Length: 149
Length: 149
Image (cartoon, rainbow over all chains, first blue to last red; front, top):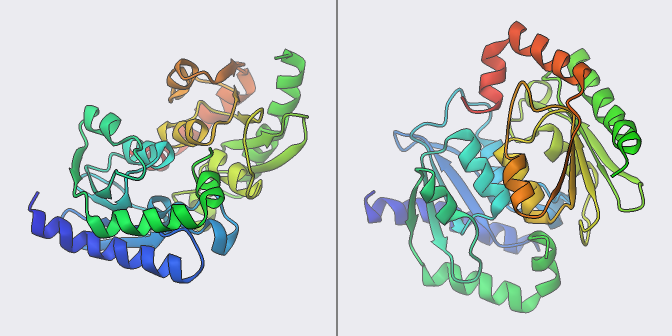
């Protein structure tokens, strides 16, 4: 896909991550875009805010998009490489593409997704790296809790 | 694990599935048990009830259990073989064991989990098969929506 488009969509996910950080939460954001570029849903990790371990950024964006008949042609945009939970979501529902802010601070299941036909656009955005690096340094216990380590 | 124990835990997941069916929803239930046999959380698919595609039975049970520091030694019990989304959940959070009611009407990612060290107990319970078979026959479109097909 067009890199300029990918970066524009990533900005939505970054805004979600920053909202999460401002709420005292884990700074990971995501957005689900339709085949025609319509924003279907956006969200951020809500472990701290809602005491809800099931709401990762990607699952929050997926939930916000509501019930969809098909995910063919949709793009999940996330500030961080998707963990196995969120990679499984992408595979199960047939989301066609994942745009990833960075995979430096955490490497999830995006290679597995690529091997199953999902288009992966890895931007390695320095702003996303810095956001996670500062968070992990500041609260490693919370981060480990969120990824089950 | 002990088959009698597995069947006793499965009954909790089946009760959840039946509650979901009575609510007009998709009849899949799950429960998360701690290493000492404590029930940590239970739930059922809530796609129809809450218009929430992110709440599969396993994610609902996981959410109901709240924030946990570790999932080592826990068991996810589910009436149906876990889809990729729910299998990813199990892998990411290091849930140690999955007890499955049946994998006849749907086969998810439990072989993949076994390959990654998760203990799989597949009961092939006729009551679970019948529950899903009747549901799928009655509303195939809803079932396909729930698994992204």
